[in-house]
Image (cartoon, rainbow, N blue to C red; front, side):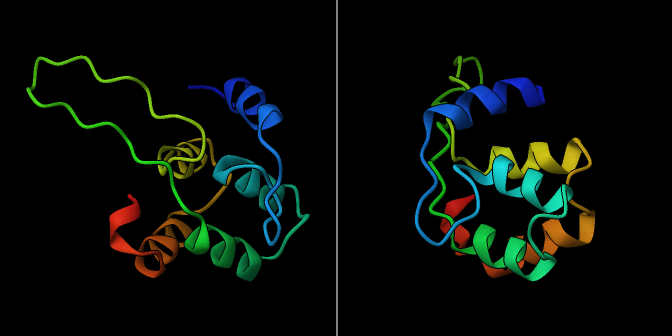
Length: 100
């Protein structure tokens, strides 16, 4: 998934009060652009209520792509270089375990 698809997803979402972006990827992009601090990034990503990612019943099952607001956006931000490995680990440690 590329940044363009996240931009389209983010355009359909409104920024929730207390957050600097419409979704996790947009929050990471704001950090990468210097619009928010590292502390604010970690706080917002740790508080975000992530959309559940569908899990297959069988290995052969086709699983739909995760929707906007899922933990996949944080993983994609890491892959795209918007956040560092250490930031990813810090958020992973701070967020509730059921939101991945």
